[in-house]
Each structure stands twice: as C-alpha cells, then as structure tokens.
Length: 521
Image 1 (cartoon, helix red, strand yellow):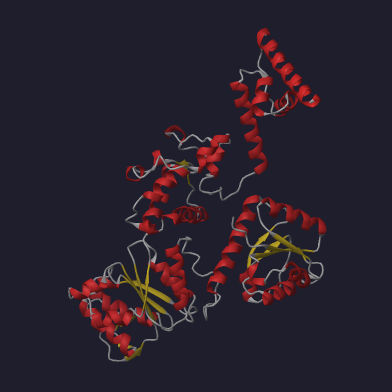
Image 2 (cartoon, one colour):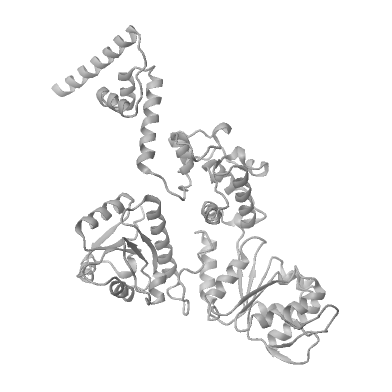
C-alpha cells in the first residue's frame, strides 16, 4: 500500500483543529498538526522534510498575520500549496507567487466535494512543482495541467516540455490529429520567457496557397487585387512572442523556401513592400504527417525540416494511453459543466468499452462523444447500450467491474437513469463508483445514507413477506431497532394474517433463545 504524502494542518483553535483532523482522517489523509507559534519546531520533531508535505491547510492564525505565515511557509518550501479555511482576508499587495500557491479557499462549514476538489488541486500543484523543480527557468508550476492524464507516455511528454519550455529553440510537435499538439504549443509559450508577448497560431493547411504568404508576412496597399489597405502579417503580430505553425506539412514548397529564409536571417518583407522588417519570434511547428517520408518524396524541404526540428516532441495517440480515458472524461465533463452546456456521466461498463476502442480521432473524438451523449441523455448516466454502435462491440463483458461487487444493474433498462432521482441503485450509478467520478456539484452524504438505509429496509421487508423479525435477521438488526427505523422512515407494517403473526413471534422467540444460550455459555 502506497502511503499518502502528509498534509500540514495549521490551526491555533484546538476544537477546530480536532474537527479538521477528524474530517481529513475520514478521507484517508495523513495529517501533521501544528500551531502558528511553533510550527517550525513541531515539523522538525515530526522528522518530515519540507518537500514531503503535499499541502498546507491554514484555518486559524491567532499567533501572527496570515500573509506573514504564508510567506514563512513559502520560503521554507516553495512548492507547498495552501488551502485556506474560514473567513481569512489577504492583503491586496500580496506577492503574486504566494497568490498562485493559494489553490483554494473554503468556508468554515466544510462540504464533501469542495474539500475533495481543493485537496486534488493542491496535490496537482505539488506534484507538478516536484516534477519540474530541477528545470531551470520554469516559472509556473501549474504548467501542463491541461495535458490530462497520468500514463507513462504522457509523463514523458511533460518531462520534455519542462526541459525545453524556456529554451530559445524551435520545437516540432508531431502526432496524430486530435492528440493535443496545440495544447502543448500553448503551454510551451506560457512557460517561456516570451509568455507576456503574443502567441499567434496559423493553420498552414487551412489557408489557400495564394493567400498564405500575405497571412504570414503581411502586404502593402495595392500589392494585389483586393489589397485596399496595408496589413500586418502573423510574423509582425507575433513580434517578441511565439508563432505556432500548425500543420506545417501542408505548406506548399514555394512558401517553404520563403519561410526558411526568414528563419535563417530573422527578417522579411511584406508582399509588395521594399522595407525589410525584423522577425523576433520563436517558432513552434506541428504536423500529423511523416515529414521524413515527405522529404524522400520531394514534398518537403530537408533544410527547413532541420531548421524547425531542433527539439522534437511526439504526442501519443489516445489508444496508447487508455488508462487516461476516465481522467479525460472527468475533465471534459467539468469543462462542459463550467460552460453551462449540460452534464453527463458514464457508468463503469461504458468506460470499459471506451478504454478498448481504437480512437482514430483521439481526444477530439472523445470530446465529440461527450458532447453528443450530453445532448441525447442530459444529466443522465450512459451505459454500454446507449453508446453509438461502433463503441459497443469493444465492451469486454468478462472483465471484472468494481460495480459488480455492489450489485448494480447493468442491463439495458437500467443503463440510463436521471440524476434527480434518489433510489439506491440510481445514486450508486450516479456516483459511478467504479470510475471514481463523483457528481461535481457534490452530494449530501447524510441524505444519501438515509436513502440507502430506507431502500434496504424496504427490500428486506419485501423479501421477508412483511415479517419484521425475518427482515431484521436479514439486516442483522434487532427487531426493536428495525421497528424504530420503520417508524423513522414512515414505513407502515403490512397487515399480517394470524399464521404470519405466529410465525414472526416464533422467529423472535428463537432469536431471543439463541441470544440467551450464547450469554449463558
């Protein structure tokens, strides 16, 4: 069993500290509790290093100011994220680095899902900091978060991005369509020394050949028919920043020659112009084509290839990292909900089928599926039977599902349910325990458990033909306890015949006799 990184809990209020420790322990977290006056000594006594703590939860700072405490903790460990609990006000002129390290602020009355979300964000921050701690120049340790997944191939991509983000070299990003090549490019820009300058993308395959030169370099008034005014090109717009040449493999040979000159001499002229302009841009390029094969066929210039391919990064296809699909689904649904475009959930059987699919369209195809399912089954649970036909044949019915152990119905009739309903079966499906996708809006745990208890009592009474003593035995409860719970949930005891009543009394008598015998032994 892998031990979780501990959380540093700082709270000067003993009662509040005890409550927080109880909640965090219930969630399976390891806690080191300290106060503001002696936190350094108390941490040293614990024998833990600063880099081992995954987050700091700050609740009550009676000993010193909040800003002062956070500054001390940040100096002690730069990769420590902060979760603030309660009404705590930060000064307006707080260091931006400290602001970025505060990943969440929660009310005193904690709720289950917001607390889980806060812990998750803090741990993402801490993991990214540790992963990139040795990369010179990386300034934002929440970088690459939009690259969702924990697979080995994606971790390798993150590592390579961390190595080259702040280097002034050209990067060629390869991979199939829909794998997220532009996401990589934008992250590289945001974590480079040019992040304050523009990021200008251009799709070389989407612009007609006769207009591509004008788009890249701009044109002067009257340079060609329709040029009624001078216009700056993408190189000028990206001055000091980054120019992203998407699908560079679709660029015609005639333009490749002109692009090569700009990359070599760092200067260019507008179409129809005579003035030479300087090009202070970093080039990031991407393609889904095999450029080396294109060079052999004479369709791509070899000298340009070596100019743009200083540092190659290959994005893996989605079929190479199926273990990331549940995380991607969660992220896509979160984005859709934040944009008020609906919501959807997938049960474990559906996710199993999606993980076995080949995904020729990669992440873009997955996003398309989520959108479609949200339209067809708004706020519902999608099962295998509800997926498009091409996905269903990939369902492995022999694979063990975590939902099987709790007896969920995975038949076609039960594959889609409404999140608004509150039965045990539907709530369990809505939580999708097999893929750990809780409703993003959270659940009322007390109400959920009450509904669970009520439904189980009803089922036991039904299976026992209304005989309370038998139902109590099935639930491993005393008859009196069960009767009290029936009153609590307003469950009326059905009318019993004389024989049923006698049978119940007999069962109860046997139960009492058995208990007395055990006690005497």
